[in-house]
Image (cartoon, rainbow, N blue to C red; front, side, top):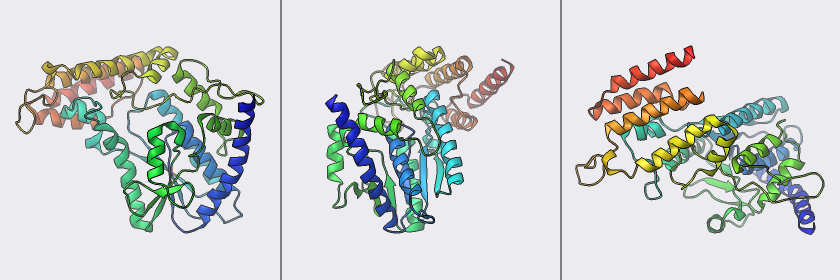
Length: 374
């Protein structure tokens, strides 16, 4: 019980003082703010803290823009993607009603960097720990490009991140490396003229949940929906918050990433969500197939694209099989997993490698017609 009481006291005292830190930093200069928003518990807590601080400023005090940026990789799990899109819509509408300078921005990777264009079109092997090409192309580049654009317009920016030291020892060491004299701030990696602001860096998982559940969401959402999503991904209930002062172990360890992620050994969140919705089991099966087939030498060219010996791109036959499997999953699950632009780019890449590019387009168009009829 003492631990629970300490948690409650930590949240109450820290939130009050942290709001003042946010207000002071916001009013210190004219730099626009960019909130890296993923829709998860940590970025939601960070944005909620920023929102509350700005809302409490005197009339006209919140004037410089705060961009709430979400990177739409096109590969988020459908259940999570649906939740985040609804949240972004609520944020935009509430900011306008409350007269706050919050602006939602949906960022996307370039077509050439999209996952299925790379794997099914270009023949990249699904990512491994040794060839992890996905994160930079799908997530980092879109955000970095937006930040650079804002720097070119404003000179400097502040990047709000929902990073926490207790996530891991490695995360804590990185934050120590980039810390500055001013609390909760530091350089944003190697990007000049960008300052990172980590307002919840000293929060534990239980503190994040307590803050989200005790403080009404300022854009009108019900954070219990976020708790439920994490609980489903954890394969059960999430007892991180309960009435009164009782605090139980949290399900906050659940993580949401690309539903095709083959960097992790097992997609635990996807597997748990599949138990809630059987349609998602097909997504897990496809992810497992990608993880298995990438090591089969028969599915790879015998030479690399530069002509040197060694495993090269996936064969056209394997790419075609992946495409057929993906369309089958779309038809069976009702989820939209690939876009027409991606299909047309895939067709172009197949044609360059000697495959039947036109056949891919015809097959996709047939798939769309059949989906409409069903």
